[in-house]
Amino acid sequence: MDTVLNATLRKVPLFAELKDDELRCVEQGEELWLSPGEEFITEGEPAENFYVLLEGQVRVTKKLAATKEIAVSHGPGTFLGEVPILLGIPYEVTGRTLSQSHLFRIKKETFWQMIATCPSTTQEILRTMAQRVQGIAALSQQQAKLISLGTLAAGLAHELNNPAAAAGRATIQLHQIFQALPSLSIKVYQRKNMNPEQLAYVADLEHNMVTEYTSKSSLHLDALTESDKEEQITSWLGTHGVADSWKLAQTLVSAGLDTVHLDTIRNSLPSDSLPDVLSWLDARLSSEVLLKEIEQSTVRISELVKAIKTYSYMDQAPIQEIDVHEGLESTMTILSHKLKTGNIKITREYDRTLPRISAYGSELNQVWTNIIDNAIDAIGERHGNILLRTKRENNNIVVEIADNGPGIPQDVQSRIFEQFFTTKGVGKGTGLGLSISYRIVVEMHKGDISFTSKPGDTRFEIRLPI
Image (cartoon, rainbow, N blue to C red):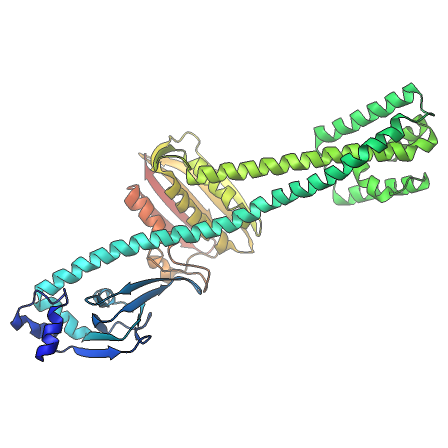
């Protein structure tokens, strides 16, 4: 080796401890001078070379999905490519130069000779590998949380928007009704041709209709029966000179009225008062309907907010005494927007006698989210079932999540807990969910996660020590 290259290699930490006679470890390497933007490592290609960056800067990227990737930049003294050579796998990243760069390339065969004959380089490579594994683990876990957060945020925005929009529409309609109610009240209760008994009858009728509706919520009529009743009432109203009969019919049917009730009302009041009385009753009942819609919408928003707080264990310490059922249910609430898009039935078989356990609640909820979300995606648009079961085995709580989707292909089952490995289509999976779930269950909670899969039956079992 020439003296200049020898001196340059000495500046690299990997070779700094080599003695003069040990430089033979790398004597078969070759120098590369690359322009900015040149690719020297390609993700997915066979790992044939080990690289040391002598001068310049490079960027290493890893694809997570069609439009997502993580990237890390490296400066002089960095080496790349050792992991796939040691593991016998293709390159898992892509490397490109960011500036004019000077690299030293060592072929795979020479790399193995260096590992075998130069202990100081082997120690440096293994030490750096350990640091990189820790960094990648932390980065991928953070990335997984961000991806999960983005998915959940989109779903929650949809879930919150529906009741909020419904409450907004109901408020506008209620405002219009309240503006009309005073004049309608005057037309009914200040009529000169209605005696006190008839006015009392109208008041009782209003009270009974509102009570009937609010106590039963609705008559639960099937669509055909309801349509027939509305058509009959519309015809009756038109015959008796009531305007906007089609608008009044739906409200009257929802209150349990039919043509027999209308005949009774007509016979109990002056004939010319019928349109005003029915319009008044329609406005009163419509206001109750809208108030109930607003109430239901705000309750739904409150439930979602509560589910978010439970899911994230907001304002609580990292480790809490948790009930796994609460975590499963808050996760189902968070994912409810995805359940609505398919024909999926949820079956719960909970052992409510299970004790609370000390755990990282938010992280466990991430595990439930990853597995249940995968089950929903596996079922897709077909009719399917997801089973949530809890039980006790000795000193462990077991959470079982099963689906009747197509199953995990046999040839990839051994890899599903690998980082960045995914069986989903391009742009749909990151390969982070199950690897993060494994780390949370096994490393953080000293538990165990396993699965069995065949077409029509995929089951994940998570064991957590009590």
